[in-house]
Length: 203
Image 1 (tube, helix red, strand yellow):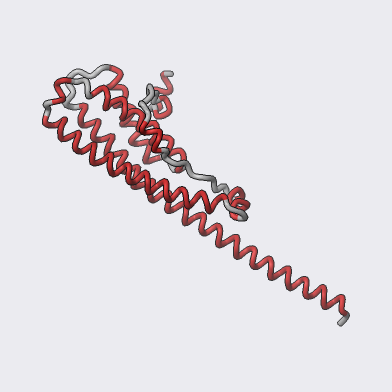
Image 2 (cartoon, rainbow, N blue to C red; image 1 turned 135 degrees about the vertical axis):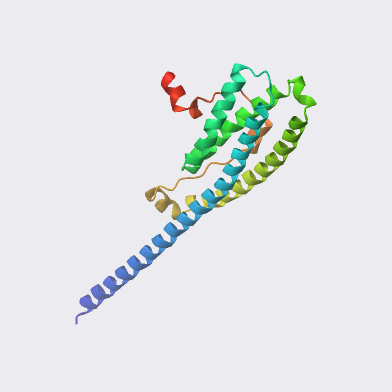
């Protein structure tokens, strides 16, 4: 066998070996992508459960408020719709965006309910406050855990050469909960994005 044939044969073996290594690396990266996705969704599921619990607390509180404005009633109706929406949204970033919208609604309701004198001495209201504070503490902890998972996930997704496969497999960076947003004054809230189909149809 000529020297040229040996060289060609060796190059072929190297090419096959490199291909096997590349495929193996790709499979390993893809499997890690899927593990990351499961971790993110798992933590987001725990956080979503706490959000749903907080919605239930506000809905139950509404039962003891005798004179609610039309705006508050509509807000509570949309919060109930948002509760169902949290369970149906599959995209993590979409779910985070929905949670941020719901957070704004909570801020508005808290401020408005504080202005009801009849609630201040009501036993159910005091129990509600204790429940909400406990749930809020859990939510803060869960958000921090979620952010930590997303930080690790985004680092893995964006470093080279993983970022090459991330785009190919449509794996995108995950959104964070920015704690600074929760220290700011709550803006006016519009729940159009979580409106029920019937309300959207009327619009």
